[in-house]
Length: 171
Image (cartoon, rainbow, N blue to C red; front, side, top):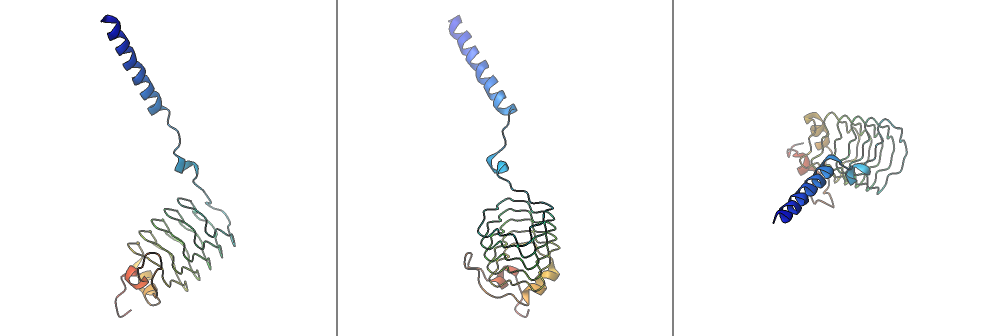
């Protein structure tokens, strides 16, 4: 009986040590290993069309006239980026952090910005036909400007641009 108790106790000690080894020796998660970081880079005229850039970081990146058509940018970070005349047609930016970004003259047709943070971003002369801004955080002044040219229905989400921006009927 004493041998059985010693073996049982030994097994418990081995299991506890194995558990502690696993807990104290963490490996990076797969998602962290594939994170792409383009912060502070010059990406003018770069072609990212249809690329999977989910979770990628583009902080303070210069992306004038870059092509992100159909790209997956869910949960990406584009803070302080310059996307002048960039093509984001059909891009998915759901849950993205897109604060202080310049979208002047950009093509945002059918882009998805659901639950994105777009504070202090500019959209002067941007094409927003069919874009979905549902539950996005956007400055009131920008919303009022966007509502003046909000047209279309997003082909993926089925939401009209005007409804996603919560535009008043007289805008």
